[in-house]
Amino acid sequence: LRTIKIRVNSHNQYGNNIFNYFCNTRCLYDYLNKHAQVIANIAPRREALETPIKVEKEKYESTRWDYGSNIDDRPQRVPYMATRTTIKSVDNDNG
Image (spheres, rainbow, N blue to C red):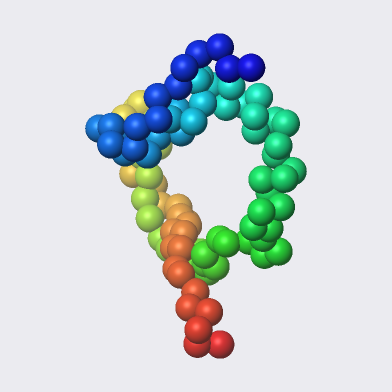
């Protein structure tokens, strides 16, 4: 039994809004909790829709500031090996 009248107006300033169909967030979540399995079965996914990526890591020489190991307490730049991570998309159409 609906106790709050909901607005059914597809011409509002926000376009088609979920709250054109539910009176508040609690009503929405009550409906989703009750019907979640049926909703998921409408268009089931057998495979993930994530875009495949290739992660490349490359080590390179860089420098950083060392603030504590110098005797005269002055910061100094020291060399170290850094890692650069690059993410590239993978084109599934080309094999």
